[in-house]
Amino acid sequence: MRVYLDHNATAPLHPEVKKAMTAMMEMFGNPSSMHGFGRDAKKMIEDARASIAGFINAAPEEIIFVGSGSEANNTVLNLTACCSSLECSIACKHGKGIITTSIEHPCILESSKCLEERGMSIDYLEVDSYGKVNIEKLKEKLSQKPMLVSIMTANNEIGTIQDIPEIVKLVHDNDVLFHTDAVQAVGKIPVDVKALDVDFLSFSVHKIYGPKGVGALYVKKGVPFCPFIRGGHQEQGRRAGTENTLGIIGMAKALEMRKLEMGDETKRLKALKTRLKDGLIKNIPDIQVNGHPEDCLVSTLNVSFFGVEGEAILLYLDIEGIAVSTGSACSSSSLAPSHVLLATGITPELAHGSIRYSLGRGTTEEEIDYVIEKTTKIIHKLRKMSTVYIK
Amino acid sequence: MSEQSGWVYSDIVKQHFMYPRNVLDDNEDFQADGEGMVGDVRCGDEMMFAIKVGKEKGIISDCRWKTYGCASAIASTSILSEAVKGMPLDEAFNVSPKDIAKKLGGLPEHKIHCSVLGDKALRAAINDYYKRNNMLPKVKEDKDRIICQCMNVTDHEIEDAVLEGVRTMLELQEHTKLGTVCGQCKDEANELMNKYIKKHFS
Image (cartoon, rainbow over all chains, first blue to last red; front, side, top):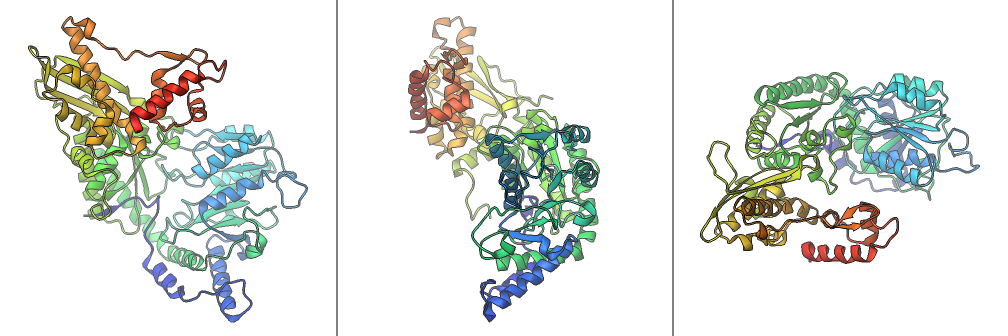
């Protein structure tokens, strides 16, 4: 049996997305060309843009297509370093420094670090044991008038969902711009940019059954902007490079399918996640569920198994055909375990022993039962050889 | 797909990972003559190695181990436990992580760090045996030697840095902060770094 429970890393293409993209493979025209081939491609892209914008309640001209969620995030952080007298820079008109959190995706954290080395002041907000941002600390830091606050909507490792509306209100009351990395949120939970009132929002679709290599950045009308990639008039001069026509078509289709399927799938996944969580807790002593008990993606279950190391668990599960991910250092080339789990205050040992199960539209009850059975056996086997787990 | 696209590590690693040899079973009555424990759970790995010694000849007659560690740590210690059975203590003391990695059909560079734990624990067990049997002159402690007096960095820390991927003096300084105050230790540190790179990776 082969079971894929790593949807937060990426997901298989939805059959409808595959169909739409396959049909588009013949359309090779450059959307910038004036001739018929170009105009055909341009129309497809603009239709897709309108549909994608509609999905998050944005206007089509507020959507910029980019190469990935990471590029969208880099683009926003880059705005803060572009200090000149130009209209496009947010650095001159707004305050100083950036506020973000200690649990962001590495593309935010490493961009922040780079800005820090160039002299920018960056505040990394702490989170509580569930991974929720400390609002009081945010209030305090906002008094220093930063130019940007960037806080992710939903966390990729533990699934915790932040109280974005409350945060945005606070940020805007201080006349500061707000960005959210919504890569794990769009298509999984309802996201309405007007209701949230965010200034920037990054998303992609390869975790919700769309293609890789395409992303989008929402920029609210009237908010200053400066391109990260220059050299072309595409995307209203906001992102150079010939458009990824196929990717954009796939993105629109993926979101169209989410509109139809998200509601039912959320209910189904909620039940499956509960089944997985209850099954693991019932069968395996000394485990800890990470992330927020309620405000959490229904597809994400992060568990720490006391006394065992995560890479060993992951590879034993892989031998059984089960795909998951781990917060253990040994799964990466660094020796530090997951920064997200450490930020929630758990011990390095429990972070090393963490497994993330992320479910998707193909996940079945039968698969969940198989995963519970195999995980139970593997944890038992590893604990028997553990120097730490003495019972 | 696991079969079609190979595995993250070699087949030998996979075999030893799936069926680790000589793991200590808590229910068995293994009377160890020497025991060693190394590593730190906070860093993600800890290892215990226990040996029985044939007293007349000073040969390891049997051994057991346990670990909190990753696949490389499990596989390398499993293969080490097979290799040292029947081996004289002196010889076993000198088994190098490189020999083990070779037996395993190679390990990715960043996993060498995880595979040195087994032989460290083995050496600790051998020393423990000597101590228990009043053979103190034979004990060869892996004593730390401070190289950088200003920042208090030891030779072992330099070795660990190399195992974690450090290859240049600049990287070593970033990693350990060594030689960043008076700078007197830089030549010696550089020599040691190159020695450890040669020891583990050439």
